[in-house]
Amino acid sequence: MTKRIFGHVPGYPEGSLFCDREELYEAGVHRHRQAGIAGSQKEGAESIVLSGGYEDDQDFGNTIIYTGYGGRDSKTGQQTHDQPFTRWNRALAYSSQNGLPVRVIRGSNHDSPYSPPTGYSYDGLYTVESFWHEIGKSGFRIWRFRLVRISEHFAPGQLIEEEQADYSVKRQEVRVVQIVRDTAKAKEIKALYRYKCQMCGTRLKCPAGPYAEAAHVRPLGVPHSGPDSADNILCLCPNHHVLFDNGAISIAEDFSLIGDPGNLTVHRNHHISKEHLAYHREHLLVGFYEDL
Amino acid sequence: MTKRIFGHVPGYPEGSLFCDREELYEAGVHRHRQAGIAGSQKEGAESIVLSGGYEDDQDFGNTIIYTGYGGRDSKTGQQTHDQPFTRWNRALAYSSQNGLPVRVIRGSNHDSPYSPPTGYSYDGLYTVESFWHEIGKSGFRIWRFRLVRISEHFAPGQLIEEEQADYSVKRQEVRVVQIVRDTAKAKEIKALYRYKCQMCGTRLKCPAGPYAEAAHVRPLGVPHSGPDSADNILCLCPNHHVLFDNGAISIAEDFSLIGDPGNLTVHRNHHISKEHLAYHREHLLVGFYEDL
Image (cartoon, each protein chain N blue to C red):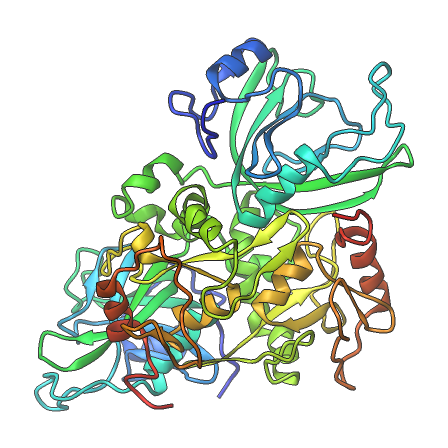
């Protein structure tokens, strides 16, 4: 299988129309021929197809309450048992936890004013704001996902490579670069440390998988222009990320922490730029410069 | 002094023009007659005026690199010593740390293509994405703030009271409701616990002030429709906030934690709704429902 794409698929902008599932599949926009959700529980959900399968779905256009997979009788389509927290349901939970964008496709048989008259339409990127479970209309446990449309002002592919290009989308970037980070270098670094914080060793164990954050030592964006490369990324728990970004903690050249006892844990395969560390001490650390 | 307003001032939409500083002051859009920054280090910065005072400012329109206050000779306006991390500089750092919006006003004497021809123009809300220090053009330490414009799609006042009203702005809400939360009930609860996490007692000490997060027990927004009231808010560290929102941890009726040893610390003046706790256990907690 080719590498998963989280975001727009090149060549298929929002609004692209498809005759059938096969065409969707061939385009790589929804890479599963039958299932409503494409993705994996280890990497997240790439895309979903709304096609009228679930009686509990609610479509408000920019907000969608989406029902997970499973628990249905294959013949009648009726809900006959509880939905599991596995596979695609967990994939959507993973996407929620890690802020990954999900492609939303509507089919003509999906009962909504936003559905296309025929075939399928690719309707853009959504984030999975939250996930939860409840007893559905049929009396069985279902998983639910609140999907919220990502503003059309943001053109995702663009920001990955050309971070400084367009100031008008900078606000969206806050959320979106975080998304993008997770798919590339950031994920690599987090995996290297098995999601344990390099400052305190904490590993947050969540149902959809462990959680850690990628912190850039020299910040991205003007005027710092730090690179999104492994030598500029740390794996931190959210608490230490806040302390690091807000100038409470920095790192000395010998990897001892400034502003906190202890040392930064550094994996032998992780080269951290001394230059970027110096930049953080010099410009981001507040305690070093002024006693509070 | 009247209560600080973080966000638009009612009656003065983006694009409002003012003849002079006095008019700005009277309107409550920039509530300091001389200083470029209005606000306090305990509550954050409400607004800034760009009026050509600092040689280091850079204005890209939607992104502004803004220089802090102080360090200048009152007669010549030249930078003659280091800028301190106090008062208004710290107010902007506080706004950055806590995600508060800042009103930006441009004066005609500010050297930028975005300045008005005469007087002052209110140019909308910006977030302080980051703050740092560096040696300025004059050879002295200056504080710098990267301000990024909040999309015009978001009408801030609106969301505070009418959370469910407009689905088209739901995405912005992610960031913005967090902002709004901090000014009202959330701040009250955080102060009650002196920014210590109710689950682990951690208090993150940052240069601009302590940091904690307000976690809603029953989530806001459809379909949960949890209220933004004290009985539905907890003061948590970012780590426990992640665990709580992602269904790793919940709270029993007797305040013992589920999924983690220990108990929730509850202040005698903090009434937490048992109903909302039950909602979280019932719908958000994953471990309780399915063993992973």
